[in-house]
Length: 152
Ligand SMILES: [Zn+2]
Image (cartoon, rainbow, N blue to C red; front, side, top):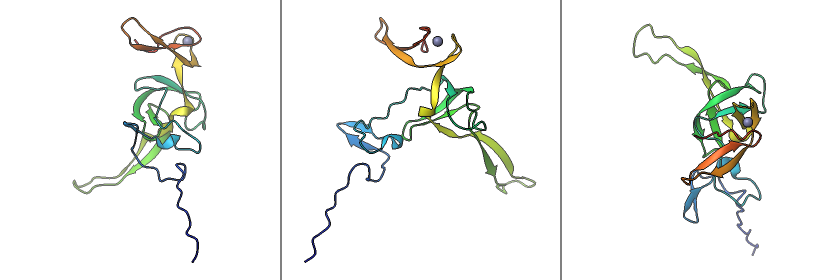
């Protein structure tokens, strides 16, 4: 008899599932499923409406330019930023109306949130944020360099 191969699935090799329940919390970001990662709760330092700067990537994607976050996709660790990372979208004519032609659109593609940094409008530089809890118990992010608040 041949010895059976042991089926041991490490988490890094496990298929990526959209949602995995761990300790009562719905977690797992596809971006965070790496070897040796113990914290599976998706955590992004960026919110919708933040002004961010792209720190890495090509000139075409808009490196070192700023934009406003329009959409957050925590399941894959990505965000969509206004005016950054344009991709061409070819729309075919649907044929519902006559004389309808297809068009080439330019729409923003999603970027990994780790490529972005918060942009401080007071010191006009990309900045890291520090957390502060105000008197009402609400978390407020502040610029580490000049103490300007990112949240109101
Ligand atoms: Zn600042």
